[in-house]
Image (cartoon, rainbow, N blue to C red; front, top):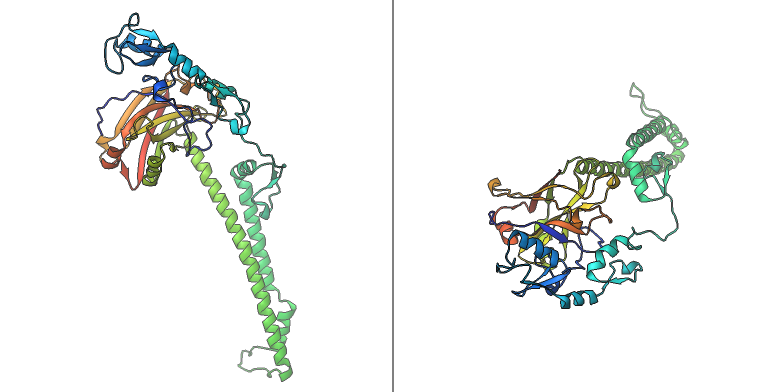
Amino acid sequence: MDRARSKDASEGIAPMGIQALSDTVLSNQPESRYECPVCLNWLRDPVITTCGHKFCKNCITSWLQNSGHCPIDNINLSMKVDIFPDNYTKREIQDQRMDCPFSTKGCTVKVTPLDLDSHIASCEYNQPETSTQSEVTVPCSFQAVGCKDMFNSQEEMNRHVETDVQKHMSLLMNAYSEMKINNDMSSASMDAKEQEAMTLWEAPDKDGNTTAAPSLNNTSALIRALYERVVVLEQRNREQDIVIANMSKQLSAFAVAKMKQNNDMLLRYCMGNYVWKIDNFQARLAAMMKDHYKMLYSPGFYTSPNGYRFCVRLNISPQNPHCFALHVHLMKTENDDCLEWPFNGRISFAMINQYNPDLTQKDTMMSNSTLTAFRKPTAEICVRGFGYTEYAVVAEVLRNGFVKDDTLIVRVNIRCV
């Protein structure tokens, strides 16, 4: 991997109508003839240069103010004599109509590509899925040991299990104590069958003297009593196995809930410094190479306990199938109304070389307040990300020691400024 190769960070579009963070489809990607080479998005107020290239008016204006030459072939250009409005392309783009990503939910609106983002933000169908089934109360998973709480959804029950840990541990201890007492009492008392068997057969006394053998008539009664006693003990053993199995399930559910709570705490208190370990990487890469629309998303992590929330996206670059694209996306939080928008900060990537740390690829970029990617999210995950469209060559990542034990590690550090 050429670590000296310069890369410009840019806003990258993520797929519309996201159904899952791990499997998405690009639905607003422009054709090459309608794509601005600078911002990689649909041409807005398209212009054409004397050297035959098309750009957004604002993009080429900003570019020429800094460099003075064409971004494609480096020919010197002047805004006054070399840039002309491309009304033909503008009419072609305006004549196109795209279905709303929420058409499957009932939206019938068709908009131009340039108006799609604003429509999605205000679409009345851009709402979380709701169930049409009748309301069903969900009992606590610790109901078997005495918890009487009922909930309207599985999510409420899960939150209850995570928060009322002390209460459920007390119920489990009480249930265990009652079961132990019952077992002790049952072992201390003899039922009628056991007493009948004891009267039919007596053990030798301390002097070794034995009592008279039972009569022949009592032999069949003794066998019957012993058989029935075995049946009772087997039934009791099965009941105890069921109780133990149920308690094991409850403890397993408690352990899973505790693990999830610990993971959520790590994501919330990582202070914007997140290490993403992508395991089973070869299989995931094969799936992305087969279908370039497949993408990998990290869990959402926070810049502070009540701060901004981001996730990282890794996928095959739509511009160059031999390279990885790496972007960050803002995500919704319960505290968005208390935060300052747009987000302003420094974002650092590091793709870790696990065999030679000196070859670790590090890149840093600053946020851009004019981009949609840093505005307050209107959906669970912002449809636009920010990062590198061609971050690293796939073959070099595999060859140069970035993958170890089928795991790729990407470290992200996000700091507010």
